[in-house]
Image (cartoon, rainbow, N blue to C red):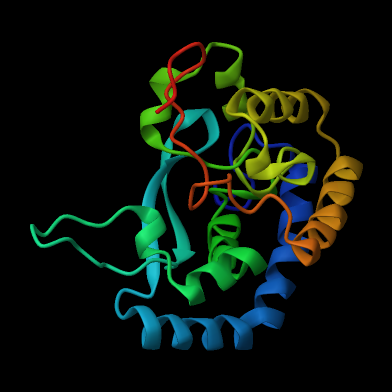
Length: 212
C-alpha cells in the first residue's frame, strides 16, 4: 500500500477522515484556488505559492505550501523589510479568511499533514522545545487544530503547546469533527489572526528564555 495513503504511525481512521474530506474538497474549491492564485500573481508577482520547510510527524521535514501574502519589498541595502511592512492588503485579507492555507490541502493529500493537528511551525524551533512540548510532533501537523480554535495567536507559545499536547493525548474522530466545525465559525469571526503588534506571532525563543 502506498505510504501516502496511510502514512506509518498514523491511525487509519484519521487518514480516512482526511481523505474523505480532502479529495472532494479540493474538487469543490478548485475555482477558488485558481482565482486566488490569479490575484496573488497580479498583486504579488511570482512565485504564487510560498514553499517552506517545516517539521512534520516526528519532526521529519516536509515542504509546506501556502499562497504568498507578502511582497518582496527591500530596504536600500537589499535586505527584506520586516514582515509587518511586507504584508499587503491582499495578504491581510487572505490571512483573515484563511484562504492562504488552501494549498495545504495538497500536503494533506500527500500524507504530510492532516486537516486537524498542531500547526507546523519552524524547523529552528525543534531545539527550543521542552521534551513535553516536543510531543506535539507525535501527531501529523494540521491546517487547523485545538490551539487554533482556543485562541490562536492571542495565546502564549506555552499555552498553544499545552493545547497541542492535549490534542495528541485525546485525539478522536469526534474531536476532529468538533474542531473542524468550530474552525469555520472562528474564520467567520476572524479571531486571533495575529498577535497584537506582529504580522502573526513573535518568534518562539524557548520556554523560560527572554522573548524579543
